[in-house]
Length: 111
Length: 114
Image (cartoon, rainbow over all chains, first blue to last red; front, side, top):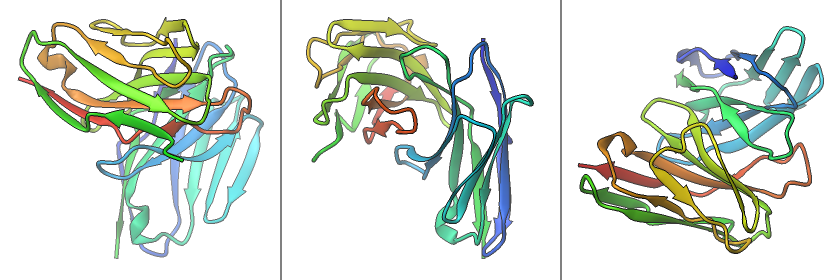
């Protein structure tokens, strides 16, 4: 089976840095994805990690530790438009590319 | 390039009615998926397909059926709608050839069963 845990809500201040954690337990692992979802919209792809370490994409970075079953998404220089839900998703070892999603973390950025 | 198109965007069904949620993509992606998202929750996989003529169950398939007669289309059928099927339904596609390529999602269908 698979279990993915994320905090339900977080609040941060505009211009600050926030780290959103994700822990997972899976029967097979072949990559971890982060998606952003604004209210009422579809999720959009942010990042992908399959090896341990940090992947950086502009203001967003994502980290993976496979031995610990742990990932985080780091958002720097927060902007009001970053207020959204952030979904962690795990890909299994099969060839279907199907993703199992966590419940998401709702981030509120305050002025 | 339209991407993934879902219709309808909104629908209200009465208990016991049936309907088909349409999903079509124009990117020639082999892999397609149906997810549902309940309020404040993540996405749950209903069914998926790795190519025309091939479908398989996901985490929550009960009460749903799918078909994949062409690469482009992946309709989701609800038979005997129940209030528990009130949710937002997302269709997604993936080329199946690159690990670091995320899903392309449709804009969703918001379904209410009363």
